[in-house]
Length: 184
Image 1: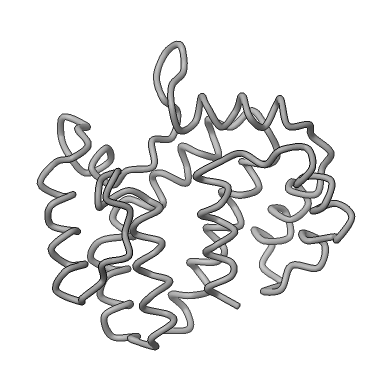
Image 2: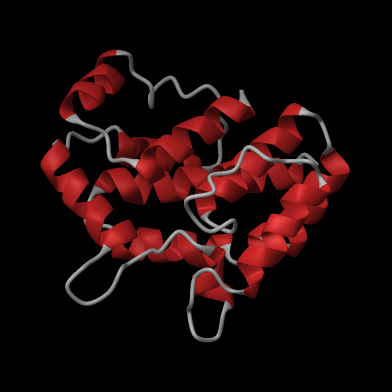
């Protein structure tokens, strides 16, 4: 089920949901019946925000300003290098370091058309480590690489979001990783 949650996160970081998908989510009560439910107030608030009725135009506009481009600046660039490099460059030495980690663990299912340290690529690697039950490497990667920037990004996502959808997604992802870390 953790892998499925990561797939949900990846899906909405790569593309905003269209109206048809939003309708399906509502009809099937995805957020009300979230499969990794806990009593954490962060998750409760996240699921409440995700359940609000917003249209695809607002969410799509939010997606663009958060992840791609905005008049002033991109609000939540999904790249570790942006948060870790002093010049906020992507494709920095951190990206090369993460690619080396992937290759050292024979992980080749990352998206080569974007930096290795993109959020999506790191989530794919985390998903693979969960799938193969490689908890030692997972714990090490989370502590030494992922958590060094993830919570900064999540805060930017929460603060930069105009939609409840992406505010809720930020909170749900934080809750997920808090629970994952606690159970390692």
